[in-house]
Length: 296
Image (tube, rainbow, N blue to C red; front, side, top):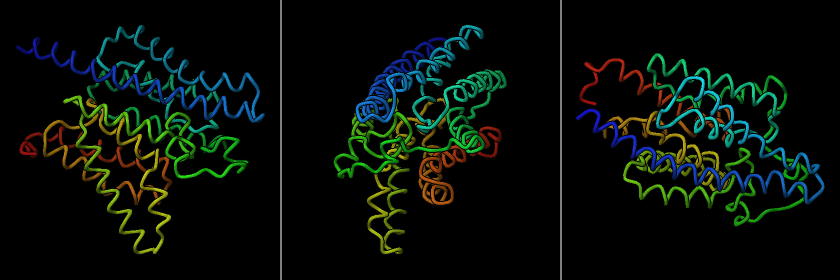
C-alpha cells in the first residue's frame, strides 16, 4: 500500500513539476528579451553580455545535474529543479562567478538538509543569502541599465507585460497570472495558499494606502511581480508547505499578515521571501511537536 501511494505521489508531483518547468522556461525567455536583447538593441550592452544573461539558468541546471549525479539523487523535485528556480530570482547586477559559487554551495547544503530529513525551504534560503552576498559585494541592484537611464516612461499595460523592476526572470505579471490560472487546474497545486495570503496582503495594502492617503502606493504594490512570483511559485511548493487544511490556513495567514510589514522594513524584493521563511519555520516547529499539534 505504501509503495503504491509512493508511486502515485511521484506521478502526481512529476506532472506538477513539468507544468512549473513550462512557465519557468517562458519567464526565462522573456527575461532574456528584457534584460538582454532589449538592452543590446539600445546599445547598453555588448553582444556577449546579451548572450550571458542566459548563462544563469544554464549554469544553474548544470550544477544541479552534477549534484544529482554525485549524490545519486532521483527525488521528485531534484537539484536541477531547485537550481533552475534559483536563476529566476536573482537581481540584474549579479556577477556570474558569485552566482556559480553560491548555487554550488546551496546544492551541497540541500544534500545535507535531505540527509537530516529537514523541510527547510532551500529556495528562500538561497534568495536571502544571495541578497546579503550581493550587498556585501556592493552589487545589489535590481534595475537593468535601461531602467537606470530612465529613457522610457512605461504605461500601466507595459508594466503588466514585464517592464517593471524585478528579479531578472520574474517581471512579467501577465505570464505569472496566466501561469497561476493554468496551475489552478492541477488538483495538487496548493492554490489556496496563493489566494488566501494574497487577499490578506491586498487588504493590508488598502488599509495602509487609506491611512497614508496615497492611492499610488496601493496601485504600485498590489501587482508587485516579486510578490506574485513568490506566492505562485515558491510559497506553494509541495515539499516546503503544509498539507493539512488547518496548517495551510495558518501558513497562509502568516504569509498574508507579514508580507507588507517585512517588505516595508526591507524592500518589496526580499520581504515576501522573509515572510515565506518565517511561515516555513513555524510549520517545521509544528512537525517537531506532533503530540502538541496533532489537531492542527
